[in-house]
Image (cartoon, rainbow, N blue to C red):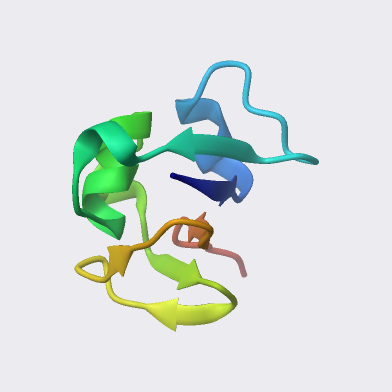
Length: 81
């Protein structure tokens, strides 16, 4: 059981060796039921750095449970001006 994780911009720095083109496959079988927030912790992304979570192309809550085959994308807050 695995999910594909994609990280945006500064979140990529949290995961050494992250490939922004391919993303990363994360085996979730050993962890039982995981929320998007718990998955982020497993791969080393601090909760405070996450602003938006997309699961299978839809904005989702951090409490949403991820399932085998899901595509999970994390985005930080973005500033500008």
